[in-house]
Structure formats: structure tokens, C-alpha cells
Length: 67
Image 1 (cartoon, rainbow, N blue to C red):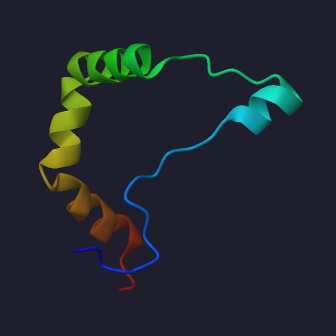
Image 2 (image 1 turned 135 degrees about the vertical axis):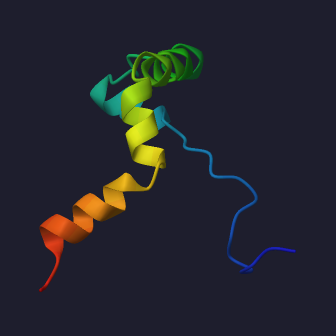
């Protein structure tokens, strides 16, 4: 069951208007974009490790503490 009756089953975007009126086309397809995203994560393992280790919480506490 859906959490709210007004929720749609999918969140598709119709880009017809932006294509027709502005001539906009995406620079990446989903396939090329997801490949580049995955490659970025593979190429930036230090960032991933630092972001997922929880150490950033210590940095936030140190730099944004109200004390």
C-alpha cells in the first residue's frame, strides 16, 4: 500500500516541454551518467572511505559545535 493516496507509483519526468521550447537535451544518457558516477567512486576511494567511516561526524562536531 502507498503511504499517501496522492503518491504516484513512479516519478517519471516528461521532458517534452523543455526539449520543444528550449531545445535542451541532456548531455548524458542514464547509462553514460551512471557509468561515470560509478567510475568516480572507484577513482576516489579515499573520499568514499572518509565519507562512510563516520569520521566526518567528528569534524562537524569540532567545527560546528555550539560550545
